[in-house]
Length: 183
Image 1 (cartoon, rainbow, N blue to C red):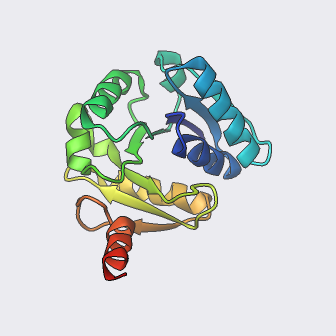
Image 2: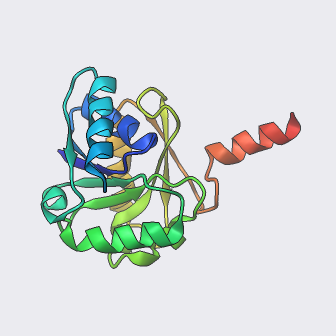
């Protein structure tokens, strides 16, 4: 089982650590070598020393991955640019997921050709410690993609919350904002 986490910000290393701790071979890909090296080292530390390898955003990084989790900035054009770039490099059966929490899955999927293999896979912070992950199918997401992500969540020891609708904020953030409004 090989995964690539794309993004060297705060969530990327935590998600990579959660996957590594679950037995996945994990690469953490980023644009800037210094940032991705630091992020991969942080992920390795969070995973108790299990290796997370720093990687470039290039074709060899994605060729054998079964799962790709995008964790870059919450900017739709930037996500579209990245996803359109990496999709042709991915194995034809690879699942591509986004950790977005503010954009709809249907909007993010707009850059992809194979939208049936795309869904939201939203981790709560800190991703390597929380017991829940949200799975958000988009309008074109195949049932097999949702089932695959449920299995991944199970291997990580996380409870999968599967959203019935693709709405901004998904499940957890909508609950959190409702509680905050009441406060």
